[in-house]
Length: 441
Image 1 (tube, rainbow, N blue to C red):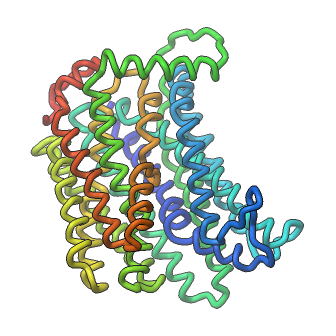
Image 2 (image 1 turned 90 degrees about the horizontal axis):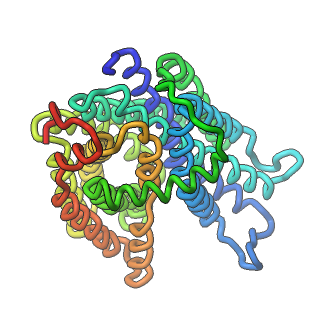
């Protein structure tokens, strides 16, 4: 434990995979897929209902999220049972990377399938890549309690998140330059999306593949049907959380609530900027780029705060700031300068709140079940929002204003803050069989 080479290899997976979430998910695939759909001669239909071009990418995201919810907890139980955490991490990472690289071949009038087929192919490749992304993160997070001692996890987790923002931002910067200098914008977008897959593939091979250690305690496991075992184990884990680890369950619920608010802000920020402030697409891309680099410093800043005040108090501080961001956005933001200032503040708490949430959860789960518990944790991780997006959409439907709708998100931060304040961290750590010594609480 605390082997520097292995920790560096682990942290660099954040650097590797963040290129996908930044370049493909956040910046490029949505607009590109919509442009392809708009170029088709006939609308897409499902059960006779015409599907708007702008709805195709969100639908693909939603389907991939549903699949994550169904499969990630199951994958976690299988990983813990088979002791194949590293192999599964690499298998899912490489699958996602190759699916992303194949997006390069999706273009107008695509051979054999045409433009309509290209939209379908792109959607399927994205669903595969995003499901693989989530699966790999489950196994990746499961390594944290094994490679870092309890007193080092906040620091290691924060540095990993920081490297993720830095790596994702660096590739996005390179792709932005490519988009500015190339005349063929569609080709530049295809190259940029494929570059995210290459980045993901190469850095996974250079670091996690080479440096992470596959741990096997040497206990014999009887041959069982892994699917049946996984389903049964999920039910067993729910029972354990309820009866044996109530504080861990309370923390997980608080995380699912406040992180839903965080993810919703991430999802709706670009649309809010475009709709309410009239910000052009190029400026939004620059805003996303700025947030990536500021979030790098924010993750490190909150790692330092956790060393002094503890992860729980630091997360609670971030939730107060998130609430202030929502209120300020509703009341005062009217110009692009104000938007960028608020984006910088948002970026400071974005990396810190998520990095410390991960490390704090790692303290509260029983050993040998890390991937299983992180399977539940991951269903509200990066890019996954449930009630938040529904509440926002409902508010927009009722009021016709995204500015008014964004106020609805304060409920998630306030409720999450209240729930988190009731979590006894020391009790949660000891109940799960871990040692709280050295952990700042």
